Length: 449
Image (cartoon, rainbow, N blue to C red; front, side, top):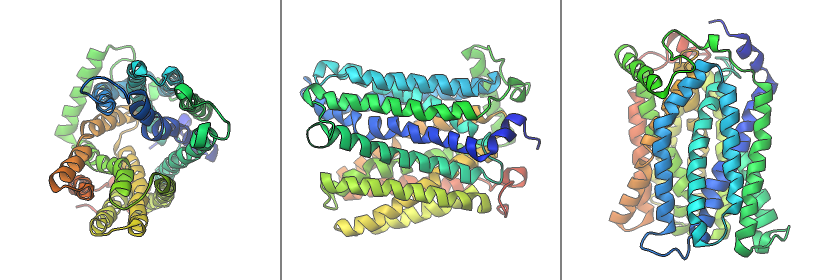
């Protein structure tokens, strides 16, 4: 297959690093804003004295749920339109800048219940924009890699994301959060130190998003149009018409992509559940404290990053399917062992084993879809990837809560997460292995089923 100059020129080491730095910078929103700092500030401080029967945590959950619905509706068409217009990089730039602005505006969310609604709106809008930005970013993976290196490049990107989150968390914790306003001594009145964290996160994301925009060429629209895509200036109605027509064609002629999207949505939700509830289980079941869980969180991210880098090379040699299957099996084994262990030592060992294999499964899932996707359809397919992921995102949290409630202990919530991983694994095993051109790049193509 002939590679366009825009793709061939970008597969050098410089563009690969530039592309990976977007992952590094994006951790500012994922790790600092959504997971560890700003969302906690909203629920524990801003909304702590919220009047009425609904808690701030519930409002946050509903806000993110509404954002998920918007993402599921918009992502496939936004990706399709960036493919057709040849404005993939421009789409990434505009969406990233929008996330940066939303993050910076969080500075104005003061520690008062009346500001909760502004904070929730910014979290929801930022989440939508961030997920939409990931669509053209993931679609660029083929531009910065070859079939022989796509696994390694994807692994490096995931690792950069994990490590960038760790570095920024340490910076803001030491500088602005620890003690009374961190080493910088920023006032904690009215949440000022946390509000400055949002500004730092916005600047971090902005700075590290610039390299990919400078180093990776834009793909021309003529390289993307195939006669079936909507015109670049088509309306959303026409874009949806083409999208549904292509889904029907895939279902009729080649269900491989659709089968993988469904399977990956399931196991990716389980992977998210590992990190979402890992700290909860560590504290409530295995005896960790707020102080001791932070070092574990850092170690967990380092383990996931290391796993992503190592598995990236195995992905190129053995194929992404084997990497995902082995990773899910290892996680299921570690989760089963954790069910019957007590104490911090056991969780340190087998909790880190779980995290070690999260990175490989996430990275290989991205490369699997790249190998399945025809050139010029990356944006559309990664839009569907985002849509199906959001559609399944309720499973792990719901099952974790159900098992913990019914069996009376957070420990048993592990079963809920493992069940989602198991169902995802079984669904993946029904997906035909990559063969022919789609398996190109692996030293040994996976055998046909």
